[in-house]
Image (cartoon, rainbow, N blue to C red; front, top):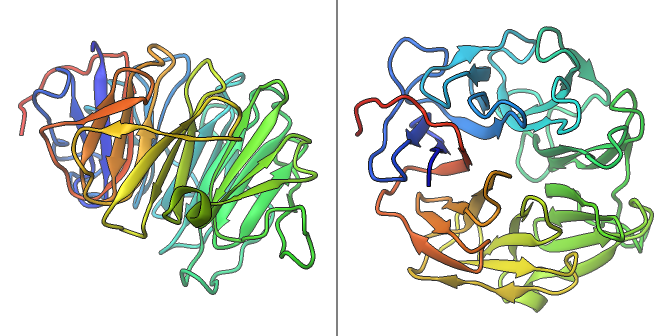
Length: 340
């Protein structure tokens, strides 16, 4: 491939390769992002492939050279841990950022490319039952109806906005109160597919929920019954298609994992082939519209997997990492530096 692979970690910042994974470089000193930082998420700008944002323990940082150097984006998130980023693909100056543990969980928005920011409602409780301090694991702007936005909290429910984030409503519940709804508050991932029909997919800790009426009703797939293992970490759309990848494991961090693929809007799933058994649950997928066939997957305990056939088969890369939190790639080639 031509481009740069970027791997976010909990303890080694962001590592990158600009020679197709042959060598890897760590961050240099004296940057806004420490070389041993905890980085939770990455987002490549949809129109500027050299520009990458990272959510870290120091707040929001930005690179304009495909991950070689990083500068702080001054914002109310300074020194908060950022867990999720979403750039509006149709209006890239709009971005959502979700924070969380060990700092207070909150949702922030910019509409001018990061020059100014505002904290959005609702006010999220400081503590929760499942993970002590909640964290916003997922946020998304609906590219097909940009006034619609979503975010999900571990643990704190599924939230939807119909006015570009000015107001939000919580739409999860319990089987007794919401029998056709999302009945788990531990939200891991949300995405929106064009269809037809337009489809919203939500991954919770032990199930998948699919809606084709804009979140009014949901069909539930029980992960353990359907896939044999329960820990439902994430779903990812393959660019330019309605096809999905699902990362699922036997726990967190887990000892085994599966990657499954759907070509029918999440109704059915097929196993994919890994050339090497992964050492823990798949934690991240990395895709880019420049080549929808090229996909990376990272496991919790540092295996990096590559697919060149849109996720049907996978091979393990030679380099292993510390805890992988996110992975992406960009067609921009980072300037070469010394490999490590």
